[in-house]
Image (tube, rainbow, N blue to C red; front, side):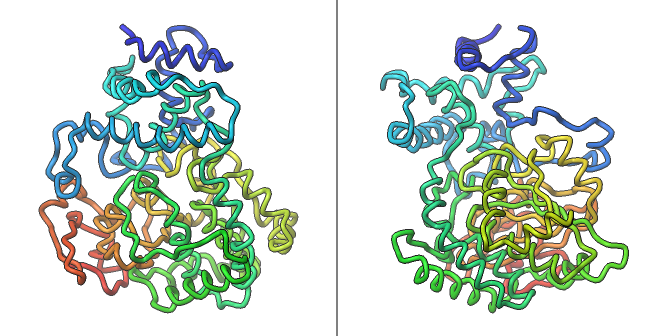
Length: 463
């Protein structure tokens, strides 16, 4: 029998025009909506050609929190119910004041708002028609997106809003990002690849831990101030990024990556999966340089399909391409060498079970995947294509799976062969403590990316 919380969600959605088809499909469609499933998924045989049978999109599910497993107890002692209630309430505290400022919605009264976290908890443990609860099907890397959809539906009736609380920050940083991208034209290609990875550290000072679905270590971030003059801010940011680039990689797959995409007589199709907004502006300049360097290269960029947190959306990319900063990239697009996939993920990570048919078919066509963002690295293990993951380590979970000290903001470019998992055993990390140079105790997965002898690495933990 449907709990009242499920019925209330469906009624709020239907009141705003969301159709659920036959009544018997209402629960299934609601679950798919909350999980961020695409409107058109791949055929089974297509998916099985892109992912192995053992594929698992992440490190653990929300349902696993119920037993208070030791791999979580090392840095998170809250039980499942307390954790859910606190996280949903914290998201509401960010969402409601922002909605009051930027929208005309009539929000529920305070008493109803206070009841939302408990309703979400009940919905998470409810067993749907497939016999599984939402908590069992939601991975840690996805939870902020799922909780935000719950809160948006309960407050507005809409699961996905056309804007996020980061829009003002991103618009303020855009002049800075464009100037940084323009100055990147003077960098050599290896330095630009490293700056592209380091750019993920820009603007982290505006984020909460929830946006990273993990504890953020802020010692290594590159802070920004949208109030500073753009020229001055761009100079400071680029200087910091180049300095990070000169430190080199903590995990160095640069030569292998460039060898994969450059100098191939038969040509190469690269799928570029983007992440944060500021970082994506730099990534577009990197794509432009790669296309200029290699005439046989084609690139399809895959941003988020909609606005999700601080990530760049397809609309953002299309807007950026009209800027004079990317006139060459616009020309390359007109020549058919660069394109934007509009049906990208609906969440802030790349869960293989939530990809559209078009994205899965792109993976099947691509020669190389270039993936930005730590959460996407954690969720795309085992994909059946050569994959290169570039990001800066500044989260506790990233530290556990890479073996790189999160206090350093160390840059990694992880090479992952088709069907390979470059980390394993996250659920055993409590068995492998290590102490960082600063004296902080961390925890490493049974096998981290740094443990792979084929990955050149330095300055990493060995447990």
